[in-house]
Length: 85
Image 1 (spheres, one colour):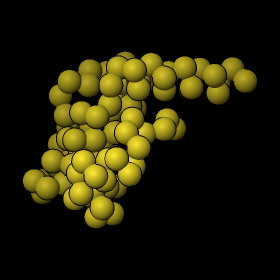
Image 2 (cartoon, rainbow, N blue to C red):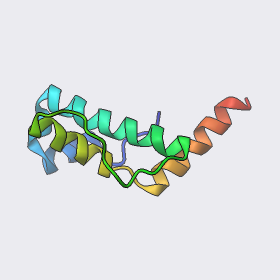
Image 3 (cartoon, one colour):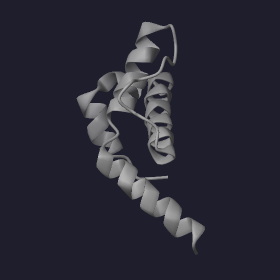
């Protein structure tokens, strides 16, 4: 989809726990689900429950909150461009 908001190397420096592949996958799932909701026009202020495991939910929340309005706008342009080409 879109390039990450933060480069992977910088993201791993800022949050070393994301070196764990499971945590990184959970973080990315949060980003992707937030973008999907944003593209659908749904409200993205409330983070949905991903897991009852607090660690996974925390990384999902971090990924969810890493999505900005600019990311959603860029994703909309990308989807529109792909649809009409």
